[in-house]
Image (cartoon, rainbow, N blue to C red):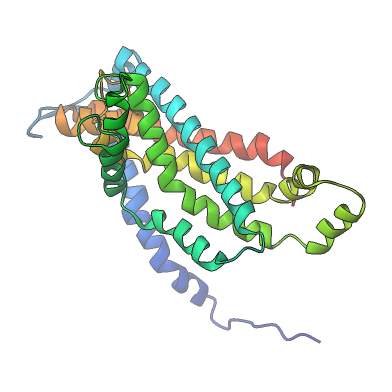
Amino acid sequence: MRRRVIFRGKGLPYLLLLPQIAITIVFFFWPAAQAIRQSMLIEDPFGLRSRFVWFQNFAGVLGDPLYLNAVVNTAIFSLGVTLLSMSAALALAVLADRPIRFAAAYKTLLIWPYAVAPAVAALLWLFIFHPSVGIIGRALVHAGLPWDYKLNGGEAMGLVIFASAWKQVSYNFLFFLAGLQAIPRAVLEAASIDGAGGSRRFWTIVFPLLSPTTFFLLVVNIVYAFFDTFGIIDALTQGGPGKATETLIYKVYVDGIVNLDLGGSAAQSAILMAAVIVLTALQFRYIERRVQY
């Protein structure tokens, strides 16, 4: 008979949860409440006077063509970063899961990019693709190709997508590799005996068994693309050229910190928070149905 652990004091579980609850309230709920409150105010740049305007800031934001442009940029950017980082990480994890020489060193080197700060990662890509000082950028210009991401919006968007995806590949790689190593080898050996080739084994056995990991990483990568890529965009393109790489999170910074439109910036942050919550809920509502646990 198994012995169960019983807490005699009913308040002990709540006491143990209290530090985490306090941190969540102070660093999440309180700032979120302040942002929602500020989104309904119009303030002067010095914060000396404010006027309550209800949803006027939200109407102004949603009617701004530049904001709609940022919405389109964010959709393209987040989709590109998520697909590129997850597909590259899955391919690398499949290769690392094979019995190869120096596998430990190979896996360690693949994890390193995750420890690089976003701004530093952007500088690394700048030194590679800058048309004047970058190794590949200068080579492209000398070859006669019109490469200049500082003037071409499509090239700038492609560069920030690649830089952001490269930063996230290591994180995805860890989870995919752990998921691959958790798959029973007997299942793969049985499929191989039945005549299933490597590609068929992957798509009919391995990938379905990785669906919980894939779903988790899908949610995490979309949140990463929406919020955690500010440093890369700021260091590489500053939202340019011509706002071609200005995403929603970067526009919040530009309008709030640079242009000192505090009410409009707070309204944008509230809309962005609501959009991410709705998007995550939709993923759990519709995509999780295809997950095989």
